[in-house]
Amino acid sequence: MIEAPPIQAPPPVVPEPAVFHRVEFTGTGAEYFRIWIVNFALTIVTLGIYSAWAKVRRLQFFYRHSRVAGAGFDYHANPITLLKGRMVALALFGLYSSMGYVGTALTIVILVVLAALLPWLLGRSLRFRLHNSSYRGLRFRFHGTTKQAYWIFLGMPLLALLTLFTLAPMWHHRLKRYQFENSAYGRTRFRFGAPVGSFYGAHLLSMAVAGGMLMVFFVILGIVVALTAVGQNQPAGAEAEPNMAVFLPLFVAGYIVAVVAGQAITGARIQNAIWNHATLGRSTFLSDVRTRRLFWILMTNLLGTIATLGMFRPFAQVRLARYYASCMTVAQLGTFASFSGAEGDEVAATGEETADIFDFDIGF
Image (cartoon, rainbow, N blue to C red):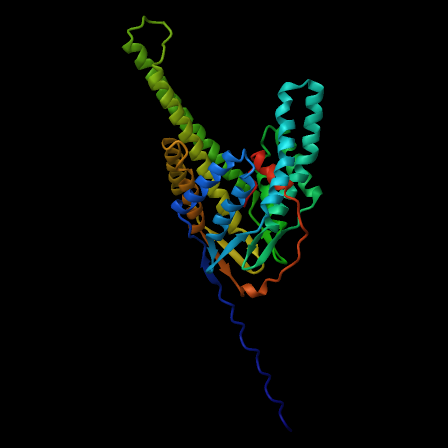
């Protein structure tokens, strides 16, 4: 009797090791200062027309100096397209500014028009920004729908308002989920898994710390007022008049420190929560932004900008970009060649410029 050969066990599956790429920002403050000062001067000389070209130069500087695995990003928007979009956005901003000079009925009409247009424009803003962004020659894409944009930019804010902002952290969470889960690198979609509790935790801790700091400063101010009254030898029961030369600087300093501390807490904790739970295909991300370090950078950037009457601003922006980049690592599985491209539709720049003019920060 011939025995059957033994069945060979399949070779063990060896997990594919991840390759870790530290994100780096290679630009310097001196480089960006030269771009910034030329942009500033030409924008003034041309009565704002050059601002579209200035924006492209600015974004190209930050994109091209943001590098992963030895390659930088790029920004491809046409300044003429941006200028056309900016003109439409300025018209909308003119409507917004006119509300203080017209009657109640017309104000309501303007609000309705803006509420109807802005969600659509902000959704287009994200589509335009990603369509004109690339890495290793491959464009990003945004798949968000108009229905989603109206819910995120109109429905959720109204709910947050009606609930006295108790739903504001949830709105922030849904906004980031909308951004990430509709974004793609070529044909590969991002995934977002940050829990909503991390957003509530960040915002509540920020409010607690900032509020506590403000209370401490108010107590200090009360002591200063009391000491001032004693120094003025005012009769008992008389209302103390604070020394404004001491009172105002302390009040402003306390307010600024508390606000920046709150920004550092939300900035660090939410940045980490988002990226530590985000994926792109089989690749993951690691973010390690430290609150104290971020507070120091934000605080010294603000003081430097005030002390130099704004001239330190380009250096401040580079410092912040370099720190955020240094805290980010990409854990890559596979190669960049595994990502395939997809043709994106041409997108108007109106939404992008509207987001800028109305000062909405919906970046990543």
